[in-house]
Amino acid sequence: MEKQSNITEGKSSFSDFTLSVYPFIELSQFHKTYYNVLEAFANGRIRKLIVSVPPQHGKSVGATTLLPAYMLGCDPDLRIAIASYSGTLASKFNRRVQRIIDSREYREIFPNTTIKQGTKPASYIRTSDEVEIIGYKGELLSVGREGSLTGNRVDCFILDDLYKDAMEAQSPVVRSNCWEWYTSVVRTRMHNNSRELIVFTRWHEDDLIGKLIETERCRMMTSMSDIDKVEDGEWLYLNFEAIKSSPPTEIDPREQGKALWPEQQDERLLEQKRNLDPARFEAMYQGHPTSREGLLYSDNFREYDTLPRDIVSRGNYTDTADMGEDYLASICYALDSDGVIYITDVVYTQLAMELSEKMVAEMLIRNDTRHATIESNNGGRGFARAIQRLAPKVRVEWFHQSGNKEARILSNSATALHMLRMPRGWHTRWPEFYAHLTTYKRLFRANRHDDAADAVTGIVEREVSTTTGRWQRMRFI
Picture 1 (cartoon, helix red, strand yellow):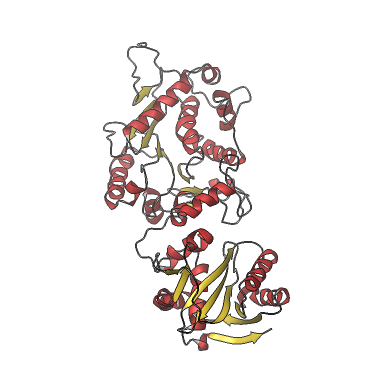
Picture 2 (picture 1 turned 120 degrees about the horizontal axis):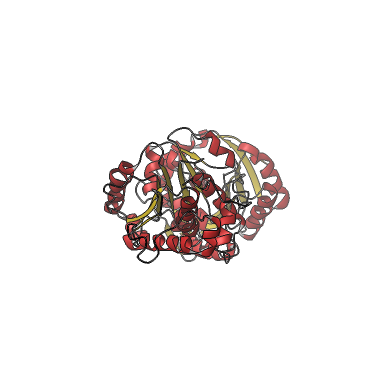
């Protein structure tokens, strides 16, 4: 028999196939993009694909239920293996695929891809773990993490959720066993033309995705044209953030701060989830996990309930954003007679300067700030002038920061922990600031954002350290 080349009669996309066999499904703009990428994988344009998706955003429906059915329709000779954290879950995916292949809608699209019905044909296998395509070489296998695939050659692996929960992901033993299983079972069943799809929610920086990013070449996907730029053996990596924090791209054109699937999980709900555990939200929902190993500050900042009576001054330190992904970090603080610094308010944002100027000025007035120090690097001078205009009673000064950022942050970290106090509940007031500061790592290049740490360091230098040599040409406005 001839292979079915693709969906026939004008139905040429994976999205169209989905709507045919699952007419009840609603595809948002995010899902259409996601399904376009999965279609490129199905057609062989992508051979090694990693996709990280937030929980409850439909990743498994697309990648582990609909995609295998679609691929077996396009090529009934394919040998596909589905793997998950347990054999039970993997079998569940397998049964869902079988139900799609059994459907009338599927037969109308792919009439040549059929599987055993009841006991016939007797010579073919159909269980919850393995099903064969009648008249072809194709089959669908399912296996749990650390399960065996002895004797089976695999053309396409789909690895979905290899960690059950946070407890498993945080276990070095589980992570090590998962990596051992991947290298000794998955990779050994592959041949020159095999394909791999890894799709799951991130839990830990040293999970399977993290290990692959560390050990093999990966290309971040920002447009569909990246598919044609991938070199042999290179992974294509696509990360969907629940709340857009990186700059807009062709593949994800959302404005920063917008939800990925607002019809189901809007910004308000996601912010509530972020407030519960900012660090875990960064991992699971934003795809940016950080382990607690090698943290510079961790959650060791001391907290206060009320300000002491002996406040001698109220200041502000502002580090303006340098590049597209950077944050403006503006921190108001109060200083007591012993030199202890109490953080009172924070503006931590990626919004444009014309918006952040107003936010910072309002914060300065609200906190009865007497003096504000603003780094003049990369547009900071203009920002300082705007702040002075909007908050005329605040003494605004700007300066050029010439010190090495890494050295400054590391050398002042102990002083910051000793002298700074955060208001109780600051993780809910400023969740992104909290997450970026408490997950900041000693290894400088391991950090995506250093804006929070840089601003905290600036306060310490301003109020505690004797670093006037690094502060070049302090100007008053």
